[in-house]
Length: 307
Image (tube, rainbow, N blue to C red):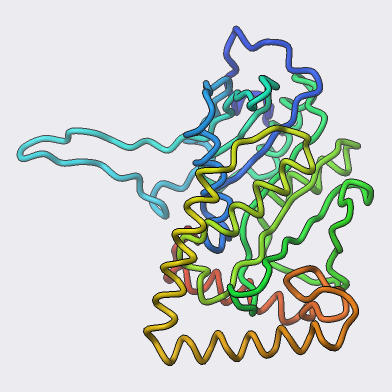
């Protein structure tokens, strides 16, 4: 017997009218090269006032033994427990426009039921657009313009972003399933994946988060603060350049990628791989292999992939 998806969450009793609101979402635990998506979510929660208006039943969704929550032991007793939370925050942009942000660990169980629960909240609140965001590794240098891949349930939502020219199979995620199921149900949904140089995929890379934030602003019309992220990106880029200059091995890798990138640009009237050139995007097999390698590097035997 199918379980009621609405039993997976609790909603506050004083939620205001949200008709026409945008829902953003980012989940920890899958792929997020450069922590691009996590940085954006953390940035929004630190810069804008917010409150939780819905909570999901994590006990039904999370495998605690694969992602053990931290506990603090102090001398002779357990002092605290950092319980996982999967919640919907209500925020307001700098013009006072409300929007929603769903954050927390990616569910380990009941993906379809969880996705139906998200759809029920979208219909309950009158959400007009749902948007996910994260980072993916790319074989390109940090010294050239970054790019972003966009996908959506309707072609016109993608806008001027060039879609990937290939079909591919990659490891599934709850974020992707939400977009897919919402499209089947006739709801508008989309996602952004910032391109992160593969040698920075395991690091925190604010430049990719800036790209995600700018893409969200353009797609949703929200007035979101960006200066703290831009300052962090400038600081990180300076440190990356310093480390590259101090390592001949790393500098050789960057120069090789620069030559490859510049060859693509010279050979095409379009921009480039990272500026979304269609002709020189990697093949489906290459992208799929990049995804698989990235996930494998993040997890050990029997573990769930974590950021």
